[in-house]
Image 1 (cartoon, rainbow, N blue to C red):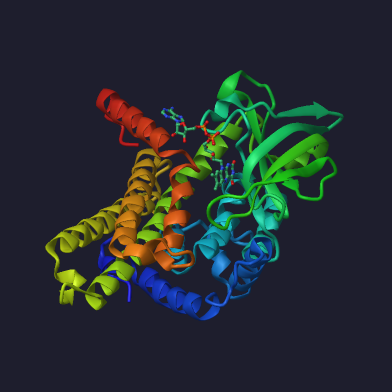
Image 2 (image 1 turned 45 degrees about the horizontal axis):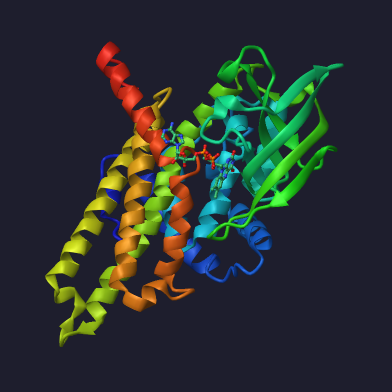
Length: 390
Ligand SMILES: Cc1cc2nc3c(=O)[nH]c(=O)nc-3n(C[C@H](O)[C@H](O)[C@H](O)COP(=O)(O)OP(=O)(O)OC[C@H]3O[C@@H](n4cnc5c(N)ncnc54)[C@H](O)[C@@H]3O)c2cc1C
């Protein structure tokens, strides 16, 4: 059984401990048989099961309750549990939150109607920010949204869009031109069946993950599709990422915990040179490093989540630290797990082989590791100059 002692840290209440125990048991019983042969179909099935059982209620605010808020600790615990069991299940859960985050935080009551379906597992959502020439450089976005006869008309391309091709709604960011760069971008909610929106290419990557490049050609949407104020799209995107970046760290933590558990069991059970592999002190050194990295990552993740839940307007520094540390260290932890498993570590279909493929993209999306370092350095400078904390 995975280490649960972290649940006694002061970041958590009894409701979190209770949630962890119930959700962990449910995932073990209800998602173990999902086969990944058809990735699109698997995602739909996972989302439907999570929705029917009520677990997607954590992914977005309740449209019937104006006081409801997303509990970031619950999101992180959910992703940690799901990633420990199955990377695709974690991905499918996460997208229901990321794809609707702008609606949860900035949507009108009419726009939030979508949340009934995404929280119920009846609709899949996506977050369409990246473009062929603007990934890390978001402010370089080229896609346009032109005001025309009371509508907006979208033209351009989005790429690397998770759930692209299977989502029912897309949160799309496009240039409305109020100002150059980051200040001239707006956010829109776009149903997948809007004429002019097409899947230009499906993209395959090293681990199961539905992805697409999308084209928008004279794609007309009503003014009511604008999320928040015109020109505030960059701020909206960053506020959403502020919340969800910590959860990417939590997914990495789930992968790392699984790698650590598998490695300890393997080292204890395998005989080498007439004794358990675990008795070799160099192996113990690796396992100690792995356990240390797992705990340190957990501290940073749940610090960021707790800070946000306590009402901080932004947790840019905390979330960047959590994502950077947890994803980079999970890669190292999993690499050690592969090494200690010997040949089995690279055998196709072995759990640590799949963890090795699953972790890699987390160090690139929602802000690459290098970008997180820049964010952290700039926050350090701001703190030194103004004494500001976040
Ligand atoms: C599996 C996967 C899922 C994704 N899902 C989504 C999604 O749902 N929605 C969406 O909008 N996008 C998504 N993306 C896109 C992702 O956010 C971008 O790939 C990421 O922002 C990097 O952009 P890029 O690929 O254009 O690389 P580039 O911007 O070309 O950057 C390449 C590399 O340069 C380095 N780098 C970048 N900036 C700096 C800097 N300032 N200083 C130093 N080094 C730097 C980093 O190492 C970076 O990885 C996804 C990507 C992947 C791989």
